[in-house]
Length: 231
Ligand SMILES: Nc1ncnc2c1ncn2[C@@H]1O[C@H](COP(=O)(O)OP(=O)(O)OP(=O)(O)O)[C@@H](O)[C@H]1O
Ligand SMILES: [Mg+2]
Image (cartoon, rainbow, N blue to C red; front, top):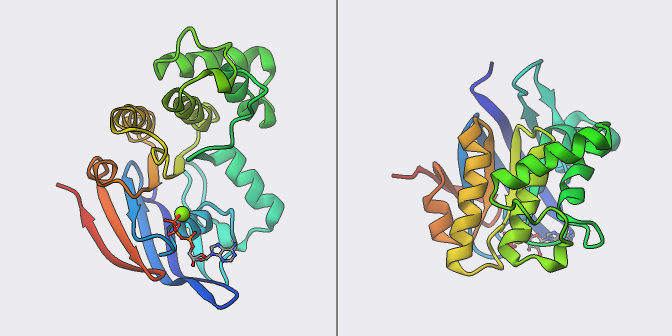
């Protein structure tokens, strides 16, 4: 098994006249929690989206090394293959959105597995067990609007995990939360990823969040300016 789970080389991406990524190399080890930090507009979200196969770069490559099977060159895949890879192998936790307000907590989590072909009768108890593991027992049947921001983020974390994602990509998952709730959401995010041998790549403005990761990658003007292992 390759020690790296994601390897990116010479990534470049331009939007009109804006160079969002100006040549990025990044290798993420299996089981790492990598924080990506940098000023607004420095290219963090673009980098996350390119690593996760949401956005295709103009140049450069991203290779995913699954725990079983050979390497997958994400940047060589077409749209539908990338969408399948994201659905089956990756998990996503964003600042907001992504959860379906009309569905309950347990339905939101189960839906991700059901889209991947798991029967509802199996998906629901599996989803409920993830919710319970993340401290949300008793809240399975609440709609998203009936949860606090931190609880909703834990539903999103459960949903990212229920499909067995090897890597979770998070974009400012604590951006809308107070510091206490933010710490709880990070507990949940780290426990469910690196705590289970999975990998986390998290974009954050929050130094406390970054300090809890194993490594911080600093981005400026679409380039990596430093990559330091956290103490
Ligand atoms: N779809 C798009 N169309 C045009 N320009 C874009 C697009 N996405 C990003 N950009 C531009 O690319 C640059 C990098 O954007 P990106 O969203 O990656 O920044 P960021 O580091 O995530 O910023 P923030 O901290 O504010 O979220 C910015 O100048 C942004 O305006
Ligand atoms: Mg961003």
